[in-house]
Image (cartoon, rainbow, N blue to C red; front, side, top):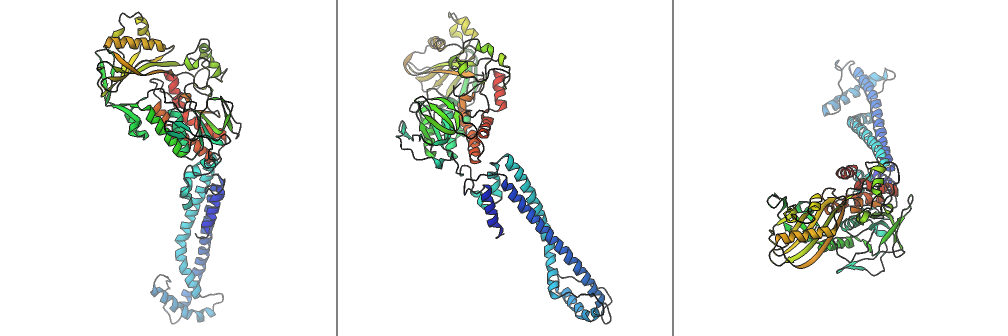
Amino acid sequence: TAMATPLVDRSLEHSGLLWHGEHVPNSRFGLVVLALGCTLTVGALALATDHVQESAQRAYTMSTVASVASGPGLTQAPVQVHHRSEANNALWRQSTAHAPAAAAAMPGVQVLSHATQHKSRSNVISVPFSGLLLTLGLATAALGGFLRLMLQAQKPTAVALAAVVSDKATEIAVGTKSHRGHMDQVPTSSNAPLQYGEISLPSYVPSHTYGVAVIGGGPAGLSLAWQLAKRNVSVVLIDNVLSKNWPNNYGVWTDEWEPLGFPDDTLSVKWDSTTIRLTQKDLIELPRGYARVDRLKTKAFMLEQCVKYGVHFCAGSAINIKEGKGDEDSFVALEEGSEVAAMVPVVAAGHYSKLVKYHSPGKRALSREGEYMTKDWEALMAETQGNNTWGWQYAQGGQPGYQIAYGVEVETVEPHGYPVNQMVLMDWSAEHLKGDIYEAEAIKAPTFLYVMPLDEKTVFLEETMLVGRPSVSFEECKRRLDVRLKHLGIKIKRVDDIEKCAIPMGGPLPILGTRTVAYGASNNLVHPATGYMVNRAIGNADLLAGAIAQGLEGGLPMEQICTRAWGLCGRRMLRAFVIFTS
C-alpha cells in the first residue's frame, strides 16, 4: 500500500482528479483503475498458482514420509499430517526423524525440510488471501471499465466519483478547479464602483474575459449571477438600471418563498389566507399564506450576495451579442460602443429580448400588428420556414396573449374595508359595470381586482386582465379600476405608487441550443395560466449555475456547456405545457 499510494496519486494528478495543473477529469482515470484491477487480478492468480504447485509438492512428500514411517519399528497406520497443532507438529517431527534411512533406499524420494514446513504453513493463509485478492482485482477491473465508459461520456462525473478512490480526492469540491473562467483569474478592478443605495458594486475589468456575462439585473439575473459566483465562476452582470429599484410588485405564496432561504425582511407584508370573489355574494377562501416581496430589500440582499462572492458589474445597455464559434469567446456589444468578453453569455433581460432568437409565430400572426414587446417580430425571430420544433408548423403559429395590469398603492380617506390579515387574490365581481357604456366589452374581456391591504387606510389595488389576445389597454384597466372604486365607495387621499405590467402568456419560445442562453422571462419561464415567475426564476438559478460551472470546470466545449444549460431551462415538458395552455 505504501508503494502504491504515490503511484495512485500521480495517476490521479495526470488524470485531472488532483488539481495541480490545468488537467481536467477524463477517461484516463478509468484506465488507471482498470490497470490497478488487472494488476491485483494477476497477483492473485500468481499466488494461487504458487499455492497449487506447493500443495502438489507437499502432498507428494507427505505421502512419501507416511510410507517410510509405516516401515519396521513404527505404526502401520497412515500418518495424517496437519500443521495447526503442536501434537501434529510433533508427529511430523517423529516421522521425518525415521525417514532418512528408509528414504535412502528409495531413489527419488525427498524429505520435507524445515523451510518447506514453514512455507507450507503459510499456504494456509495464502489460500483465502489469494481468493480475496482475486475478487478484489476483478471488481476493481470492472469498476475501471465502468469509469472509463462513464468519464468518456460525462467528464465532470469524475468529481463525484473521485471521493471513493483516494483520500486526497475528497479535497475536490465544485468550484475549486482553476480554469480560464474561474474567479481567481479576474484582476482587481481599478474603476470606480457603481452604487445601489449604500451598496458599492465593483466595476468590471474591460480587458478581462469573464466566465459568464449575465445581461439583466432583475430577480432572474441577480440570482443566477449570485449562484454562479458561489461556484467560483467569474461573472459580470450587465444592466443599464442597476441604481434603480425594480418597478414591479411581486406577490408570492409564503410556502414557496420560504424555502429560498431569504431573510424575513424581504417580505414586507404577510397574509394568513387569500380569497377569490366570483360575485359580491360568492366568496371562496383559500387557507394558504401570501406575501408581498419587499422590492428594495430583496434587490439589496441579492446584490450584497453578488458582491460577497465576487460578481463584477457593468452599467450599460447590451444591444447585440457576437457569439463565438467553437471555443471562441463571445462578445456583448454595449450601446456606448464597447464590448464585454465572456465564455458563456446569458440573457435575463425580460420578455422577448432582442438578444435572444425565437421561433416564428407563423404567417398568420405576422400578418397583423403585434403588441408591446412583440410588435417587431422580424427583430426577434430566427426561423423563416419549415416546422417549429416546439409544436406547430411555421404557417400555423400564433401570437402570445398578454396579461395586462394597472395598479396603484394609495392611502384612502376612510378605512378601505378590506381585512388586513387577508389578501384578495381575485375579485371577479362585475356589478359595478352594469349600465356602463363599455359593459358589453367588459363582459367579453373581463378583468379582476387584486388587493393587498397594507393597513386600514393603505392598500395596493390592481385591475388585471388575466390573459387576452388581443389584450385590453392600460387605459381601459385604469378606467375600470376607477369605476370599481367609485362603486365600492373608496376615496383616494394620496397615490404613492403606480404600476403598469404587461406579461406575455404562451407565444413563441426561444430556439434551443444557441451559444446565447436565455433565462427567466427571456426564456418564457412564466406560468402560462397565472403569470407567476419570480419564485421559479430565483429557485431554478441554482440548477442552471451548477450546470454551467460544472461544464467550465470539466473543460467541456462551449457548445456542449450551452447545450446543457438549455437542457435545464428549456425542458420539453415545460415547453409542452406552455404550448398546451396557449
